[in-house]
Image (cartoon, rainbow, N blue to C red):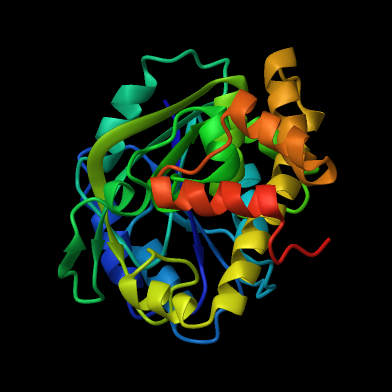
Length: 311
């Protein structure tokens, strides 16, 4: 069984060693770590070279290329670099708990290899010094984890750093010209839920570090308060997320969906184009919602009233 761990780095010298060391401490030792640097200007590339000399399982795939592709295209490139049975995505600034690979690979054995599979886990949210902020990111932020397509259409609970995909799912993404993705982890979860299996392990397998340089991160109270004191910005963000999730879901229509799922997706991406009563009917019939009651209230309220909506 071939296992590739994919890491995209960018100016990550501060925490990179700690993350790579946590990968090297995994209870499963038969893996290859492929690292692509996305144009760092600090000491990140030197650290990667250092670890390549220490451990033959680690490969720096672009030592002479400093092109900045962005996080989605960088991981897309990594996924195509070398074939494996399973691929794990890794951030540069977190810490993996030692059983992470073992638990996810064990879970994967219960599902057929010829269907798309994504297995993900919970995370423990920590500060930059690894002080625990939240024992469960999923319960704190989303109430529960998603495993169904209708859930993932409107809200993502899959964090890339704890996601594992099989080769069938990897081939589907790399073979598709997918456009307007919010994030690769969210889109891969949609494809897995639509055509195969989206599987959640409740146990945290990563310390998800929050710090000032996070590209993405957990929704903290500080971030929420910053939004609420600027309501015009908040509503603009809500609408951007709805529209972006619709554009992302449109890519699914290029795949061999079942008739039921195709109808589910088509009605979601066109819901703002129909009259009020039809919008209400679609929300009731298809169950479009968020994971928490308050978020559902805001989500459905905006769609029904079109408050602050701009085409």
